[in-house]
Image 1 (tube, rainbow, N blue to C red):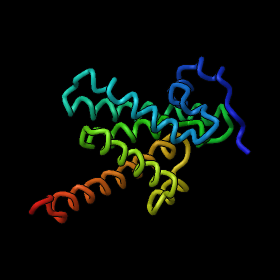
Image 2 (image 1 turned 180 degrees about the vertical axis):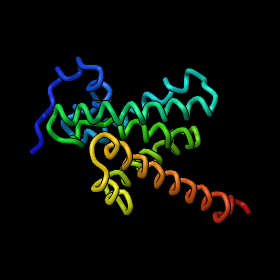
Image 3 (image 1 turned 135 degrees about the horizontal axis):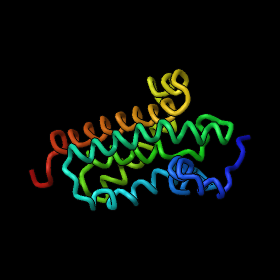
Image 4 (image 1 turned 90 degrees about the horizontal axis):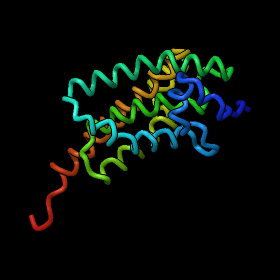
Length: 169
């Protein structure tokens, strides 16, 4: 059984980030809580109205920041990829949402697909999760889950646009 992190950890900026501003402290499905927090925070990130390249650069910075903060939090908790560490889900979800059509339905599908891939860890996600350790490993497997999610969304878009005729056609 993994130790439950204390709310007191949030006083440390690295832990505050790693624990998804507290969303990772959820007693039920912290990874899902972190993903939902990312979804809720996404409009705040977009409010800055950054150009696309700048937004992607910001996500790259968040990824690198996550390598260091998640490693530090994992060490403090005694478990490198503790379930309460959700910054990896948040950064990956922001990447997915960046490429997802801006409707609630598409975003909900993106969230559900991301959680599915993050939980099931199909190859090569599971192998990467086992091979890469510490902060990089924590961040990298969720990046792969984001890639699977984007591929699934592209396939779904293709099906809806090209294979299913519109009503009345």
